[in-house]
Image 1 (tube, rainbow, N blue to C red):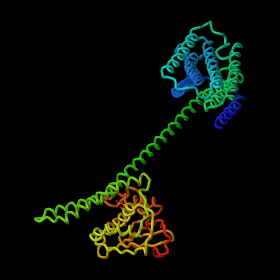
Image 2: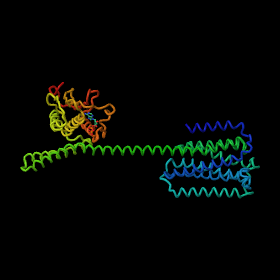
Image 3: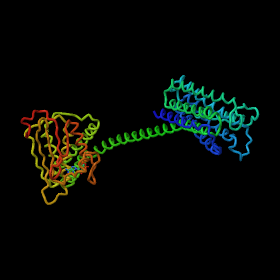
Length: 509
Ligand code: ADP
Protein backbone atom coordinates (compact mmCIF):
# COMPACT_ATOMS: atom_id res chain seq x y z
CA UNK A 1 0.00 0.00 0.00
CA UNK A 2 2.77 2.38 1.07
CA UNK A 3 4.81 1.32 -1.96
CA UNK A 4 1.91 2.05 -4.33
CA UNK A 5 1.37 5.43 -2.59
CA UNK A 6 5.00 6.40 -3.00
CA UNK A 7 5.05 5.31 -6.63
CA UNK A 8 1.91 7.40 -7.29
CA UNK A 9 3.44 10.43 -5.55
CA UNK A 10 6.60 10.19 -7.64
CA UNK A 11 4.48 9.82 -10.78
CA UNK A 12 2.70 13.08 -9.88
CA UNK A 13 6.06 14.83 -9.32
CA UNK A 14 7.15 13.71 -12.80
CA UNK A 15 3.95 15.05 -14.39
CA UNK A 16 4.27 18.35 -12.50
CA UNK A 17 7.83 18.84 -13.72
CA UNK A 18 7.05 18.06 -17.37
CA UNK A 19 5.85 21.50 -18.52
CA UNK A 20 9.05 23.13 -17.21
CA UNK A 21 11.36 20.29 -18.08
CA UNK A 22 13.33 22.19 -20.69
CA UNK A 23 13.99 25.28 -18.54
CA UNK A 24 17.69 25.62 -17.87
CA UNK A 25 18.88 26.21 -14.36
CA UNK A 26 22.08 28.18 -14.71
CA UNK A 27 24.82 27.93 -12.10
CA UNK A 28 23.54 24.76 -10.49
CA UNK A 29 26.84 22.92 -11.05
CA UNK A 30 27.98 23.43 -7.43
CA UNK A 31 24.91 21.47 -6.20
CA UNK A 32 26.01 18.47 -8.22
CA UNK A 33 28.84 17.25 -5.92
CA UNK A 34 26.46 17.35 -2.92
CA UNK A 35 23.90 15.36 -4.89
CA UNK A 36 26.54 12.87 -6.03
CA UNK A 37 27.93 12.52 -2.50
CA UNK A 38 24.43 11.81 -1.14
CA UNK A 39 23.77 9.32 -3.92
CA UNK A 40 27.12 7.56 -3.37
CA UNK A 41 26.66 7.29 0.40
CA UNK A 42 23.09 6.03 0.13
CA UNK A 43 23.89 3.45 -2.55
CA UNK A 44 27.07 2.19 -0.89
CA UNK A 45 25.27 1.87 2.46
CA UNK A 46 22.38 0.03 0.83
CA UNK A 47 24.84 -2.35 -0.81
CA UNK A 48 26.71 -2.99 2.44
CA UNK A 49 23.50 -3.51 4.43
CA UNK A 50 22.14 -5.91 1.82
CA UNK A 51 25.42 -7.82 1.94
CA UNK A 52 25.18 -7.90 5.74
CA UNK A 53 21.77 -9.59 5.54
CA UNK A 54 23.47 -12.33 3.54
CA UNK A 55 25.37 -13.48 6.62
CA UNK A 56 22.00 -14.77 7.88
CA UNK A 57 20.69 -16.48 4.77
CA UNK A 58 22.20 -17.01 1.38
CA UNK A 59 20.40 -15.46 -1.59
CA UNK A 60 22.16 -15.24 -4.93
CA UNK A 61 19.62 -12.63 -5.98
CA UNK A 62 20.39 -10.36 -3.02
CA UNK A 63 24.14 -10.71 -3.65
CA UNK A 64 23.66 -9.48 -7.20
CA UNK A 65 21.52 -6.48 -6.28
CA UNK A 66 23.89 -5.57 -3.41
CA UNK A 67 26.81 -5.65 -5.85
CA UNK A 68 24.76 -3.45 -8.20
CA UNK A 69 24.17 -0.85 -5.46
CA UNK A 70 27.86 -0.84 -4.48
CA UNK A 71 29.01 -0.51 -8.08
CA UNK A 72 26.55 2.29 -8.81
CA UNK A 73 27.44 4.14 -5.58
CA UNK A 74 31.17 3.94 -6.23
CA UNK A 75 30.81 5.16 -9.82
CA UNK A 76 28.78 8.21 -8.66
CA UNK A 77 32.05 9.67 -7.31
CA UNK A 78 34.09 9.79 -10.56
CA UNK A 79 30.90 10.76 -12.42
CA UNK A 80 30.58 13.93 -10.27
CA UNK A 81 34.30 14.68 -10.38
CA UNK A 82 34.37 14.48 -14.17
CA UNK A 83 31.17 16.52 -14.65
CA UNK A 84 32.03 19.52 -16.82
CA UNK A 85 32.29 22.74 -14.83
CA UNK A 86 31.89 21.14 -11.42
CA UNK A 87 35.45 21.05 -10.22
CA UNK A 88 37.24 23.71 -12.28
CA UNK A 89 39.36 24.55 -9.28
CA UNK A 90 40.88 21.05 -9.39
CA UNK A 91 42.11 21.87 -12.87
CA UNK A 92 40.87 18.51 -14.11
CA UNK A 93 41.04 18.33 -17.87
CA UNK A 94 38.50 15.58 -18.35
CA UNK A 95 37.10 14.55 -21.68
CA UNK A 96 33.44 15.51 -22.06
CA UNK A 97 32.75 11.88 -23.05
CA UNK A 98 34.12 10.53 -19.74
CA UNK A 99 31.14 11.67 -17.64
CA UNK A 100 28.68 10.28 -20.15
CA UNK A 101 30.57 6.97 -20.40
CA UNK A 102 30.57 6.65 -16.60
CA UNK A 103 26.84 7.53 -16.53
CA UNK A 104 26.11 4.92 -19.20
CA UNK A 105 28.10 2.14 -17.46
CA UNK A 106 26.59 3.06 -14.11
CA UNK A 107 23.01 3.09 -15.36
CA UNK A 108 23.25 -0.05 -17.49
CA UNK A 109 25.28 -1.87 -14.82
CA UNK A 110 22.70 -1.17 -12.12
CA UNK A 111 19.79 -1.97 -14.44
CA UNK A 112 21.48 -5.29 -15.32
CA UNK A 113 21.94 -6.13 -11.65
CA UNK A 114 18.23 -5.47 -11.06
CA UNK A 115 17.33 -7.70 -13.99
CA UNK A 116 19.65 -10.44 -12.69
CA UNK A 117 18.02 -10.05 -9.27
CA UNK A 118 14.55 -10.50 -10.76
CA UNK A 119 15.67 -13.48 -12.86
CA UNK A 120 17.27 -15.18 -9.86
CA UNK A 121 14.19 -14.53 -7.70
CA UNK A 122 12.12 -16.25 -10.33
CA UNK A 123 14.56 -19.18 -10.50
CA UNK A 124 15.63 -19.57 -6.86
CA UNK A 125 12.55 -19.00 -4.74
CA UNK A 126 12.65 -17.19 -1.45
CA UNK A 127 15.21 -19.20 0.54
CA UNK A 128 18.43 -20.83 -0.52
CA UNK A 129 20.52 -22.27 2.24
CA UNK A 130 22.53 -20.98 5.14
CA UNK A 131 24.36 -17.67 5.46
CA UNK A 132 27.41 -16.71 3.46
CA UNK A 133 30.76 -16.45 5.22
CA UNK A 134 32.22 -13.01 5.93
CA UNK A 135 35.21 -13.91 3.74
CA UNK A 136 33.12 -14.50 0.63
CA UNK A 137 31.19 -11.26 1.23
CA UNK A 138 34.43 -9.30 1.57
CA UNK A 139 35.67 -10.88 -1.65
CA UNK A 140 32.47 -9.70 -3.31
CA UNK A 141 33.03 -6.12 -2.03
CA UNK A 142 36.63 -6.15 -3.31
CA UNK A 143 35.62 -7.49 -6.72
CA UNK A 144 32.96 -4.78 -7.13
CA UNK A 145 35.34 -2.05 -5.92
CA UNK A 146 38.04 -3.28 -8.36
CA UNK A 147 35.53 -3.23 -11.24
CA UNK A 148 34.44 0.32 -10.31
CA UNK A 149 38.05 1.53 -10.12
CA UNK A 150 38.89 -0.12 -13.46
CA UNK A 151 35.88 1.48 -15.20
CA UNK A 152 36.71 4.87 -13.67
CA UNK A 153 40.36 4.73 -14.74
CA UNK A 154 39.42 3.67 -18.27
CA UNK A 155 36.73 6.37 -18.58
CA UNK A 156 38.88 9.13 -17.16
CA UNK A 157 42.03 8.25 -19.08
CA UNK A 158 40.61 7.06 -22.37
CA UNK A 159 40.46 10.52 -23.88
CA UNK A 160 39.70 10.36 -27.59
CA UNK A 161 38.88 6.65 -27.55
CA UNK A 162 35.54 6.87 -25.74
CA UNK A 163 32.18 6.54 -27.54
CA UNK A 164 30.76 9.89 -28.65
CA UNK A 165 27.78 10.16 -26.31
CA UNK A 166 27.88 13.98 -26.00
CA UNK A 167 27.66 16.66 -28.69
CA UNK A 168 28.93 19.32 -26.26
CA UNK A 169 29.14 19.72 -22.45
CA UNK A 170 25.32 19.91 -22.15
CA UNK A 171 23.65 18.26 -25.17
CA UNK A 172 23.79 14.57 -25.97
CA UNK A 173 24.83 13.13 -29.31
CA UNK A 174 22.64 10.66 -31.30
CA UNK A 175 24.69 7.70 -29.97
CA UNK A 176 23.40 8.37 -26.41
CA UNK A 177 19.83 7.47 -27.41
CA UNK A 178 20.80 3.76 -27.24
CA UNK A 179 21.63 4.04 -23.53
CA UNK A 180 18.18 5.11 -22.23
CA UNK A 181 16.50 2.75 -24.67
CA UNK A 182 18.58 -0.19 -23.40
CA UNK A 183 18.04 0.83 -19.78
CA UNK A 184 14.29 1.22 -20.28
CA UNK A 185 14.12 -2.25 -21.85
CA UNK A 186 15.97 -3.69 -18.85
CA UNK A 187 13.60 -1.88 -16.43
CA UNK A 188 10.48 -3.17 -18.18
CA UNK A 189 11.82 -6.74 -18.22
CA UNK A 190 12.79 -6.48 -14.54
CA UNK A 191 9.42 -5.08 -13.49
CA UNK A 192 7.61 -7.84 -15.40
CA UNK A 193 9.69 -10.60 -13.78
CA UNK A 194 9.37 -9.11 -10.30
CA UNK A 195 5.61 -8.85 -10.58
CA UNK A 196 5.59 -12.54 -11.51
CA UNK A 197 8.01 -13.60 -8.77
CA UNK A 198 6.96 -11.21 -6.02
CA UNK A 199 7.45 -12.96 -2.72
CA UNK A 200 9.33 -10.70 -0.32
CA UNK A 201 9.24 -7.12 0.93
CA UNK A 202 12.50 -6.53 -0.91
CA UNK A 203 10.88 -7.67 -4.17
CA UNK A 204 8.12 -5.15 -3.72
CA UNK A 205 10.50 -2.29 -3.02
CA UNK A 206 12.84 -3.20 -5.85
CA UNK A 207 9.78 -3.03 -8.11
CA UNK A 208 9.11 0.52 -6.86
CA UNK A 209 12.80 1.35 -7.37
CA UNK A 210 12.59 0.14 -10.96
CA UNK A 211 9.48 2.21 -11.50
CA UNK A 212 11.19 5.32 -10.08
CA UNK A 213 14.32 4.74 -12.13
CA UNK A 214 12.19 4.43 -15.26
CA UNK A 215 10.58 7.76 -14.45
CA UNK A 216 13.96 9.33 -13.77
CA UNK A 217 15.18 8.12 -17.12
CA UNK A 218 12.02 9.31 -18.82
CA UNK A 219 12.54 12.79 -17.38
CA UNK A 220 16.27 12.92 -18.04
CA UNK A 221 16.40 11.54 -21.53
CA UNK A 222 13.00 12.09 -23.11
CA UNK A 223 11.38 15.07 -21.38
CA UNK A 224 14.56 17.08 -20.83
CA UNK A 225 15.85 15.76 -24.17
CA UNK A 226 19.12 14.71 -22.59
CA UNK A 227 20.00 18.31 -21.88
CA UNK A 228 21.81 18.62 -18.57
CA UNK A 229 21.02 20.99 -15.70
CA UNK A 230 17.42 21.72 -16.75
CA UNK A 231 14.38 21.44 -14.43
CA UNK A 232 13.47 18.09 -15.99
CA UNK A 233 17.03 16.85 -15.56
CA UNK A 234 17.19 17.93 -11.91
CA UNK A 235 13.76 16.46 -11.13
CA UNK A 236 15.01 13.21 -12.61
CA UNK A 237 18.12 13.41 -10.42
CA UNK A 238 15.99 13.94 -7.31
CA UNK A 239 13.88 10.93 -8.28
CA UNK A 240 17.13 8.98 -8.64
CA UNK A 241 18.11 9.93 -5.10
CA UNK A 242 14.66 9.01 -3.79
CA UNK A 243 14.83 5.66 -5.52
CA UNK A 244 18.32 5.04 -4.13
CA UNK A 245 17.11 5.87 -0.61
CA UNK A 246 14.05 3.68 -0.80
CA UNK A 247 15.66 0.27 -0.28
CA UNK A 248 17.94 1.77 2.38
CA UNK A 249 14.95 3.13 4.30
CA UNK A 250 13.16 -0.21 4.07
CA UNK A 251 16.29 -2.05 5.21
CA UNK A 252 16.88 0.26 8.15
CA UNK A 253 13.23 0.20 9.27
CA UNK A 254 13.07 -3.59 8.91
CA UNK A 255 16.23 -3.86 11.00
CA UNK A 256 14.71 -1.56 13.64
CA UNK A 257 11.53 -3.65 13.73
CA UNK A 258 13.63 -6.81 14.03
CA UNK A 259 15.59 -5.32 16.91
CA UNK A 260 12.37 -4.24 18.63
CA UNK A 261 11.00 -7.79 18.28
CA UNK A 262 14.26 -9.22 19.57
CA UNK A 263 14.21 -6.88 22.57
CA UNK A 264 10.59 -7.86 23.22
CA UNK A 265 11.40 -11.58 23.08
CA UNK A 266 14.40 -11.10 25.37
CA UNK A 267 12.25 -9.19 27.88
CA UNK A 268 9.61 -11.92 27.81
CA UNK A 269 12.29 -14.59 28.28
CA UNK A 270 13.57 -12.70 31.30
CA UNK A 271 10.04 -12.45 32.73
CA UNK A 272 9.55 -16.20 32.27
CA UNK A 273 12.84 -16.85 34.02
CA UNK A 274 11.86 -14.52 36.87
CA UNK A 275 8.46 -16.19 37.16
CA UNK A 276 10.16 -19.58 37.41
CA UNK A 277 12.52 -18.14 40.01
CA UNK A 278 9.56 -16.79 42.02
CA UNK A 279 8.00 -20.25 42.08
CA UNK A 280 11.32 -21.70 43.30
CA UNK A 281 11.57 -18.97 45.95
CA UNK A 282 7.94 -19.52 46.90
CA UNK A 283 8.58 -23.23 47.29
CA UNK A 284 11.62 -22.80 49.50
CA UNK A 285 10.08 -19.95 51.50
CA UNK A 286 6.89 -21.89 52.09
CA UNK A 287 8.83 -24.96 53.29
CA UNK A 288 10.73 -22.71 55.69
CA UNK A 289 7.49 -21.08 56.84
CA UNK A 290 5.58 -24.30 57.45
CA UNK A 291 8.45 -26.06 59.12
CA UNK A 292 9.20 -23.28 61.54
CA UNK A 293 6.42 -24.28 63.89
CA UNK A 294 7.46 -27.93 64.52
CA UNK A 295 11.08 -26.78 64.70
CA UNK A 296 10.46 -24.24 67.45
CA UNK A 297 8.29 -26.79 69.25
CA UNK A 298 11.18 -29.29 69.02
CA UNK A 299 13.58 -26.77 70.50
CA UNK A 300 11.21 -25.97 73.38
CA UNK A 301 10.70 -29.68 74.10
CA UNK A 302 14.44 -30.36 73.91
CA UNK A 303 15.08 -27.63 76.51
CA UNK A 304 12.32 -29.08 78.69
CA UNK A 305 13.82 -32.59 78.43
CA UNK A 306 17.27 -31.19 79.33
CA UNK A 307 15.79 -29.43 82.34
CA UNK A 308 13.97 -32.59 83.52
CA UNK A 309 17.15 -34.64 83.13
CA UNK A 310 19.41 -31.94 84.63
CA UNK A 311 17.60 -31.93 87.96
CA UNK A 312 19.41 -33.51 90.95
CA UNK A 313 16.85 -36.27 90.67
CA UNK A 314 16.15 -36.59 86.94
CA UNK A 315 12.43 -36.79 86.06
CA UNK A 316 12.63 -39.52 83.49
CA UNK A 317 8.89 -39.85 82.62
CA UNK A 318 8.55 -36.09 81.85
CA UNK A 319 11.80 -36.09 79.89
CA UNK A 320 10.61 -39.13 77.94
CA UNK A 321 7.30 -37.36 77.16
CA UNK A 322 9.18 -34.28 75.91
CA UNK A 323 11.46 -36.46 73.78
CA UNK A 324 8.43 -38.29 72.36
CA UNK A 325 6.98 -34.90 71.42
CA UNK A 326 10.25 -34.14 69.62
CA UNK A 327 9.96 -37.39 67.68
CA UNK A 328 6.34 -36.49 66.82
CA UNK A 329 7.33 -33.00 65.68
CA UNK A 330 10.20 -34.43 63.65
CA UNK A 331 7.81 -36.71 61.78
CA UNK A 332 5.38 -33.84 61.29
CA UNK A 333 8.15 -31.65 59.86
CA UNK A 334 9.05 -34.42 57.43
CA UNK A 335 5.44 -34.79 56.35
CA UNK A 336 5.12 -31.00 55.93
CA UNK A 337 8.09 -30.96 53.57
CA UNK A 338 6.51 -33.75 51.56
CA UNK A 339 3.09 -32.05 51.55
CA UNK A 340 4.49 -28.65 50.60
CA UNK A 341 6.32 -30.18 47.70
CA UNK A 342 3.18 -31.96 46.58
CA UNK A 343 1.23 -28.67 46.66
CA UNK A 344 3.69 -27.22 44.20
CA UNK A 345 3.69 -30.37 42.17
CA UNK A 346 -0.06 -29.81 42.00
CA UNK A 347 -0.72 -33.41 42.96
CA UNK A 348 -2.65 -32.19 46.00
CA UNK A 349 -1.07 -34.61 48.45
CA UNK A 350 -2.61 -37.79 49.82
CA UNK A 351 -6.37 -37.60 50.21
CA UNK A 352 -8.65 -39.37 52.62
CA UNK A 353 -12.19 -38.95 53.95
CA UNK A 354 -11.96 -36.63 56.96
CA UNK A 355 -14.32 -35.41 59.61
CA UNK A 356 -13.80 -31.66 59.33
CA UNK A 357 -14.85 -30.81 62.94
CA UNK A 358 -12.27 -33.31 64.19
CA UNK A 359 -9.55 -31.79 62.01
CA UNK A 360 -10.43 -28.33 63.34
CA UNK A 361 -10.42 -29.53 66.92
CA UNK A 362 -7.05 -31.21 66.51
CA UNK A 363 -5.49 -28.08 64.98
CA UNK A 364 -6.92 -25.85 67.72
CA UNK A 365 -5.64 -28.26 70.33
CA UNK A 366 -2.11 -27.79 68.97
CA UNK A 367 -2.53 -24.04 69.31
CA UNK A 368 -3.84 -24.15 72.91
CA UNK A 369 -0.62 -22.83 74.44
CA UNK A 370 -0.05 -20.13 71.82
CA UNK A 371 -3.61 -18.85 72.32
CA UNK A 372 -3.17 -18.78 76.09
CA UNK A 373 0.23 -17.08 75.83
CA UNK A 374 -1.22 -14.38 73.56
CA UNK A 375 -3.91 -13.59 76.13
CA UNK A 376 -6.63 -14.31 73.60
CA UNK A 377 -10.06 -15.79 74.21
CA UNK A 378 -10.98 -18.35 71.60
CA UNK A 379 -14.71 -18.71 71.04
CA UNK A 380 -15.70 -21.65 68.85
CA UNK A 381 -19.16 -22.21 67.41
CA UNK A 382 -18.69 -25.77 66.13
CA UNK A 383 -20.52 -27.75 63.44
CA UNK A 384 -23.56 -29.49 64.84
CA UNK A 385 -22.41 -32.93 63.78
CA UNK A 386 -19.86 -34.65 61.58
CA UNK A 387 -18.98 -33.06 58.26
CA UNK A 388 -17.16 -35.31 55.83
CA UNK A 389 -14.68 -33.81 53.39
CA UNK A 390 -12.13 -35.42 51.11
CA UNK A 391 -8.76 -33.92 51.90
CA UNK A 392 -5.35 -33.99 53.39
CA UNK A 393 -5.32 -33.80 57.18
CA UNK A 394 -1.88 -32.20 57.55
CA UNK A 395 -2.57 -29.52 54.93
CA UNK A 396 -5.99 -28.59 56.35
CA UNK A 397 -4.62 -28.43 59.90
CA UNK A 398 -1.87 -26.20 58.60
CA UNK A 399 -4.45 -23.81 57.14
CA UNK A 400 -6.27 -23.55 60.49
CA UNK A 401 -2.96 -23.02 62.34
CA UNK A 402 -1.93 -20.27 59.91
CA UNK A 403 -5.21 -18.39 60.10
CA UNK A 404 -5.37 -18.54 63.91
CA UNK A 405 -1.67 -17.63 64.25
CA UNK A 406 -2.23 -14.61 61.95
CA UNK A 407 -5.17 -13.56 64.15
CA UNK A 408 -3.07 -13.95 67.32
CA UNK A 409 -0.31 -11.83 65.79
CA UNK A 410 -2.83 -9.17 64.73
CA UNK A 411 -4.18 -9.00 68.29
CA UNK A 412 -0.76 -8.52 69.84
CA UNK A 413 -1.05 -4.72 69.85
CA UNK A 414 -4.55 -4.65 71.36
CA UNK A 415 -4.62 -3.35 74.92
CA UNK A 416 -7.49 -2.15 77.10
CA UNK A 417 -10.08 -4.57 75.71
CA UNK A 418 -10.58 -8.25 75.38
CA UNK A 419 -8.62 -9.98 72.62
CA UNK A 420 -11.08 -12.27 70.93
CA UNK A 421 -10.92 -14.80 68.11
CA UNK A 422 -14.25 -16.30 67.06
CA UNK A 423 -14.42 -19.40 64.90
CA UNK A 424 -17.85 -20.00 63.37
CA UNK A 425 -18.73 -23.21 61.57
CA UNK A 426 -21.82 -23.57 59.39
CA UNK A 427 -23.26 -25.39 56.41
CA UNK A 428 -24.33 -23.62 53.24
CA UNK A 429 -25.89 -26.28 51.05
CA UNK A 430 -23.10 -28.66 50.14
CA UNK A 431 -20.42 -26.32 51.41
CA UNK A 432 -18.85 -26.52 54.84
CA UNK A 433 -17.89 -22.97 55.83
CA UNK A 434 -15.52 -21.92 58.63
CA UNK A 435 -14.91 -18.25 59.51
CA UNK A 436 -12.02 -16.97 61.60
CA UNK A 437 -12.85 -13.54 63.01
CA UNK A 438 -10.65 -11.44 65.28
CA UNK A 439 -11.23 -8.04 66.85
CA UNK A 440 -7.79 -6.76 65.91
CA UNK A 441 -6.86 -3.83 63.65
CA UNK A 442 -8.27 -5.52 60.51
CA UNK A 443 -6.82 -5.22 57.02
CA UNK A 444 -6.76 -1.76 55.44
CA UNK A 445 -8.05 -1.45 51.88
CA UNK A 446 -4.86 -1.04 49.86
CA UNK A 447 -3.37 -4.12 51.51
CA UNK A 448 -6.54 -6.21 51.31
CA UNK A 449 -6.09 -6.94 47.62
CA UNK A 450 -2.51 -8.11 48.11
CA UNK A 451 -2.47 -10.16 51.27
CA UNK A 452 -2.80 -13.45 49.35
CA UNK A 453 0.18 -12.58 47.14
CA UNK A 454 3.40 -14.46 47.87
CA UNK A 455 5.90 -12.44 49.92
CA UNK A 456 3.36 -9.79 50.92
CA UNK A 457 3.80 -9.07 54.61
CA UNK A 458 3.41 -6.08 56.90
CA UNK A 459 5.39 -7.77 59.64
CA UNK A 460 9.07 -7.05 60.15
CA UNK A 461 9.87 -10.77 60.39
CA UNK A 462 7.01 -11.97 58.17
CA UNK A 463 7.59 -14.00 55.05
CA UNK A 464 4.24 -13.29 53.47
CA UNK A 465 3.76 -16.93 52.47
CA UNK A 466 1.13 -18.10 54.98
CA UNK A 467 -2.03 -16.85 53.29
CA UNK A 468 -0.75 -17.76 49.84
CA UNK A 469 -0.11 -21.35 50.94
CA UNK A 470 -3.50 -21.47 52.73
CA UNK A 471 -5.34 -20.38 49.60
CA UNK A 472 -3.37 -22.84 47.43
CA UNK A 473 -4.28 -25.68 49.80
CA UNK A 474 -7.98 -24.80 50.03
CA UNK A 475 -8.26 -24.35 46.27
CA UNK A 476 -6.49 -27.67 45.71
CA UNK A 477 -9.30 -29.14 47.86
CA UNK A 478 -11.93 -27.65 45.55
CA UNK A 479 -12.79 -24.83 47.97
CA UNK A 480 -12.16 -21.11 48.45
CA UNK A 481 -10.49 -18.88 51.01
CA UNK A 482 -11.22 -15.18 51.19
CA UNK A 483 -11.09 -12.09 53.37
CA UNK A 484 -14.61 -10.94 54.25
CA UNK A 485 -15.16 -7.39 53.07
CA UNK A 486 -16.62 -4.96 55.62
CA UNK A 487 -16.69 -7.51 58.40
CA UNK A 488 -16.80 -4.78 61.03
CA UNK A 489 -13.95 -4.33 63.49
CA UNK A 490 -11.05 -6.69 62.97
CA UNK A 491 -10.45 -9.16 60.17
CA UNK A 492 -12.53 -12.17 59.14
CA UNK A 493 -11.13 -14.88 56.90
CA UNK A 494 -13.58 -17.50 55.63
CA UNK A 495 -13.00 -20.77 53.90
CA UNK A 496 -15.39 -23.23 52.36
CA UNK A 497 -14.88 -26.82 51.37
CA UNK A 498 -17.19 -29.17 49.49
CA UNK A 499 -18.86 -31.51 51.98
CA UNK A 500 -19.55 -35.05 50.89
CA UNK A 501 -22.50 -35.80 53.19
CA UNK A 502 -25.98 -34.29 52.73
CA UNK A 503 -25.53 -31.91 55.64
CA UNK A 504 -29.05 -32.27 57.06
CA UNK A 505 -27.80 -32.93 60.53
CA UNK A 506 -24.21 -31.97 59.86
CA UNK A 507 -24.24 -28.35 60.96
CA UNK A 508 -25.99 -25.08 61.57
CA UNK A 509 -28.19 -24.24 58.62
P1 ADP B 1 3.02 -13.18 57.18
O1 ADP B 1 2.35 -13.82 58.35
O2 ADP B 1 4.41 -13.68 56.97
O3 ADP B 1 2.93 -11.71 57.22
P2 ADP B 1 0.71 -13.98 55.68
O4 ADP B 1 0.53 -14.42 54.28
O5 ADP B 1 0.28 -14.91 56.74
O6 ADP B 1 2.23 -13.63 55.86
O7 ADP B 1 -0.06 -12.61 55.85
C1 ADP B 1 0.15 -11.54 54.98
C2 ADP B 1 -0.30 -10.24 55.60
O8 ADP B 1 -1.71 -10.23 55.76
C3 ADP B 1 0.22 -10.00 56.98
O9 ADP B 1 1.51 -9.45 56.95
C4 ADP B 1 -0.80 -9.04 57.54
O10 ADP B 1 -0.51 -7.71 57.17
C5 ADP B 1 -2.07 -9.43 56.85
N1 ADP B 1 -2.92 -10.23 57.74
C6 ADP B 1 -3.07 -11.56 57.74
N2 ADP B 1 -3.95 -11.94 58.71
C7 ADP B 1 -4.38 -10.82 59.30
C8 ADP B 1 -5.31 -10.55 60.38
N3 ADP B 1 -6.00 -11.53 61.02
N4 ADP B 1 -5.51 -9.26 60.74
C9 ADP B 1 -4.85 -8.27 60.13
N5 ADP B 1 -3.97 -8.45 59.12
C10 ADP B 1 -3.73 -9.72 58.72
